[in-house]
Length: 403
Image (cartoon, rainbow, N blue to C red):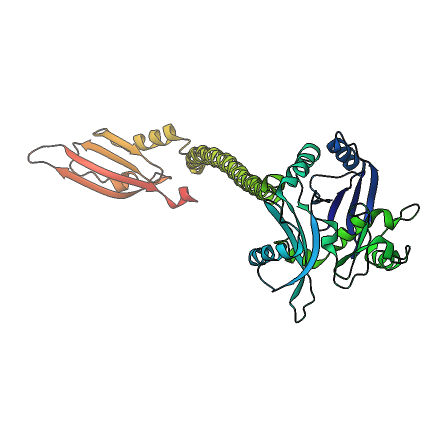
């Protein structure tokens, strides 16, 4: 534990000490005490805990002396917690004048071991004393982690200790209760002060170790490693009085895992939504560009067609400028007995179909005076007994005309 709080109730006052681990040692960060309200002890505990800034997340150890409770030290065999508890039940008749009804046993096996067995601190009290403590806990703080009797934290090497809040007429030393008259002043307190100053960072000022000796003794046990290893014999509080921190932590962990998964899937959904929007935008952009491409292709095709037409028009020759004059010259050379049936004038030639009644018509000689044309082909046909003949002639530009 990094932090814990000890609530100690005596017959006349209440003490609270809050410890927090700091640089390897526990520091007594808050401490307070006040007289116990006998009519409403829970109100006194609640007020004092609030004054010291106690938080419900901090483990709480409640300590007090139970009515008709007895503390002793005995030897036992090192066993599991349940087995040792059963063995200690057989030890009670030897230690007690009469065994309490519904006896509750709290014990702590110590580290040392001898031929007689393992020394064990034992605190036994009747179960009828528990409801009063339970009422104080439920009315003030509702839950507590442990109930510990102060002397249960004693070690075998410890010297005498006197806690008048527990026993006014006796002190405990060397595994026995001894009369207070045998205690020599406050010399017994010096080793305790040296040890607690070594273990804890204690406040200065008016803080007196003797006044908070029970809390410091319990704090030494709670801060040690053996406290976590030997809780089986110390944990005697009913389940309804102990906080369910593990259950709360598991519930909180499940909630955090759920929120983490929700955040994870929310992020995935966000990415999917963003990707879908981007895909829709790109798809629409692709459709728009495809439409533009089709429109541009149609325009380009129309432009190419128009360009071909323009090129065809541009590449055309100007044609014959003196058609009438040349026809007139050609007509003047023909005899009167020759009739032109058809004429087709192209860029490179003139095809003429004529009809003539002349017997010996020498057209190449007749047309020799033409400056721009010369005869390329000439064909004369006469059918049967007809007097007229059909003449097909083709004229091409002369060399002078070409020049």
